Structures are given as structure tokens and as C-alpha cells.
Image (cartoon, rainbow, N blue to C red; front, side, top):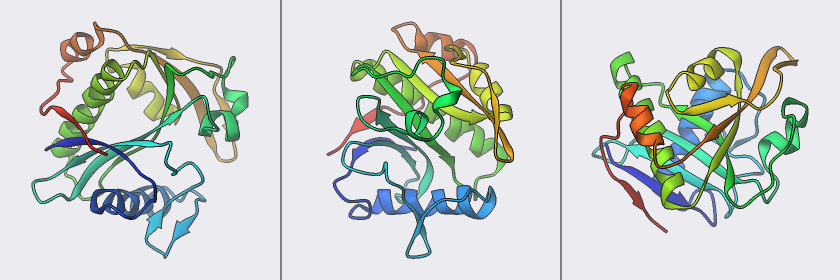
Length: 200
């Protein structure tokens, strides 16, 4: 299961990106019923999917989407600051602070494979941060998922008090990344199974 880091100047010019946006629509719109924009009835693409976003994508041997996450720089508009500022006690804005959004596991995966892809994506996020000078990740999650993220083994804490927003209870979190992070994840059973490759 290779994991690739991609940037995009247009959301659908790359096969891996197109598969990711299609999977995001199936998960966040079809399954979770989030009110999000959909392009051509197939792709979940929003205002943050621009050339500044970075995507980590786990693919199968045929290039099919297994899992993905989007990273947004906090020096530009990002999800937490734009849509959920009340969740964070102090909103970040620094080159070494990025936001994790749209953490997506493909709906077709059976439970054991979901766990393997999830772990590879989490390990890839840590490795990407170390390779690109990212010291802190931020994110927004519903409470059950937020509790899972806090328990992965890395240094992670709430970035503010959870709040009810619409029909969901959401919380912001802050993840500190340093050279010890891969070992902390591995000690909790989350290890990297493939190298992180960079692609333009």
C-alpha cells in the first residue's frame, strides 16, 4: 500500500486525486450526510482544495484509493479558523503549524484493512511532518473520532472546549510532532508499512 504526498493546481487532473475526491463524496456526503459541495455529482471538493493543499493518499497496487488526508497551511485560510473558530482557544498561524482535514478511509474496506490503512496514514502524517518542518498539527473532529485520535500514542491534547455545532458535537485538537513521535506511535501498535513518497 504505497502512500504518496501530492499537491494540486487543479482538483481532478490526477487519477489519484480524482479517486480521493470521489471517495470523500461517498464517505462525507453519502454516508455521513455532511452538507458539502459536490462537483459533477461525484466529487467532494471545497474552497480549500487549491494549490496550497497537500494530500497524503494511500493506494492499492492498481492505484485505487484506500485512504487519504488533506493538509492545509495555517498561514492561509483553513477549516478550523474559517468555519469553527470557537472551538480553538488560540487559532494557529505559523509556517510550522498545519491542519489535518478530510481524513478519509474508503467505504469498501473491511475492518482489518481499515485499521491497517488508518495506521499507515497516521504514521505517514508523522513522517511527512518530520520531513517538512511541521511541528504541530491541528484538526476538528466529532467526539468519538477525537477520542480515538487522542489515544493513538502521539502527544495530542484538546485545543479548546468541545461544542455542539448543529447536530454534531465537535472538538479541536493539537498534535505535537517531534523525532520521538514515530516511536510513540509504534509503541501503541501504529507503525509505518511503506515509505512516504513525495510527488509533484
